[in-house]
Amino acid sequence: MTMHAVDLIRKTRGGQELTPDEIAFLAQGAAIDAIPEEQLAAWLMAAFLQGLSLAEVDALTTAMKFSGEVFDPSPLGKFAVDKHSTGGVGDKTSFLVAPIAAAAGLVVPMISGRALGHTGGTLDKLESIPGYRTQLSLVEMEQVLAKVGVSIVGQTENLVPADRVLYMLRDRTSTVDSPFLIAPSIMSKKLAAGLNGLVLDVKTGSGAFMQRKEDALFLAALMVETGERSGTRTAALLTNMNQPLGRFAGNWIEIAEALDLLAGKRNPLNEDLRELSLILAGWMIFLGGVATSAKAGRHRAEEILQSGAALKIFTEMVETQGGDTSSFAAPEKFHQPGATKELRADRSGYLAQVDCTQVGWAVQRLGAGRARSEDPVSAHAGLEMHIKLGGKVQAGELLCTLFADRDEQFAEPETLLRDALVIGDEPLPDDPLIQEIITAENRKQYLEAANHP
Image (cartoon, rainbow, N blue to C red; front, side, top):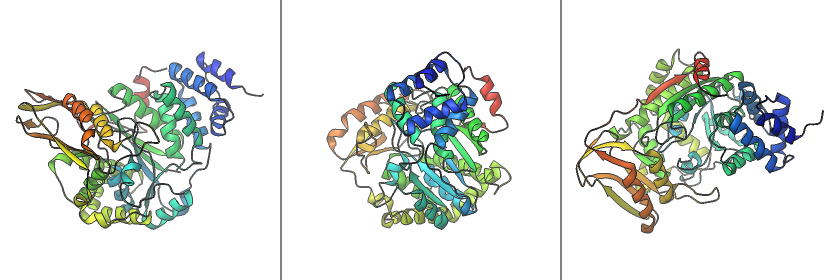
């Protein structure tokens, strides 16, 4: 029978389940521009309001995955694994976990994105390295993987084209934050890389897209379910995003921070970043069969980090993709912002609360992020935090340092940060770094516990 989008809109709007063929019709119609945007938008709104079944989420993920070209890592002869974060402030774990996993003997085809809203973009950070190419063909990516074991790139024009269209429409119709649409969007891109294993870093807290723990847990379980249904070993960690991860948030300054950790340099203000990276890498190593448990994987990850092997691989990846690594020997000297401003505490006490989303918007408005997809970003904009949650502070003490291209860019970010960083009389308890772990074995209990359609 001939299918019509309007019939499928009516069906979803009425709470009826679409068949895999009907879902595939919508995804392919989006990919090849065969269904008008207003009908796709109407179906997205119906799905947003009614929710989708697990079978529909699985079918949408599969249809989007195969809406364009897919990558096959099997000729490389190694277990293909990746890590995905749902977005945060100062989140630079990719630059640590990817080379660690490659040094453990795995292959890491990492397809990443750009800054979105208040969160930073992996590609923008990498492009602050002069010459680094994020746009490779799948053939070029395979060549880098064969040589180095890891390649961090952007989505090609023909990779999951259905998601590119549907995401743009979700952004324009305020239907982004539905777990039933987020999961297929994320998982279709990851699974199109031909992964054997995937570790998900699902953020929750004041700086996350999913600020309520219950919502983040459901999304995590839904993505684990989707990955396992596809035959990809999948685990998700629910992690704390109540403050920026590490010391820095921006583009080059995050690369510099990652380089320091790769080189074995430690600082009390980025121990959270180091620990989270080791735990995530440990799960990647465990899923890849190199370790007998995630705990043993974390131990192996730390051995690799301390040996310098991960730094060597990261440097080789950057050079192979055209990047100039001459600044890696002294990354702090390459940091040349046009203007710098210090933000100091107006009272004594403790850093009791951080509105991490507001911190992210401050970083974006300093020039490190973008308001529109076509906006340029500044390589050297961002901020350095000089205190973590619960830390004691004296009146006049330095809270953070702001970096921008021009002095006139500081006014709005400074206002945002004054409101975001709350000094109190007593430190408040914060959630642990790792809050929950969702695996193939326990995912069903989280799905069943959630109050969703």
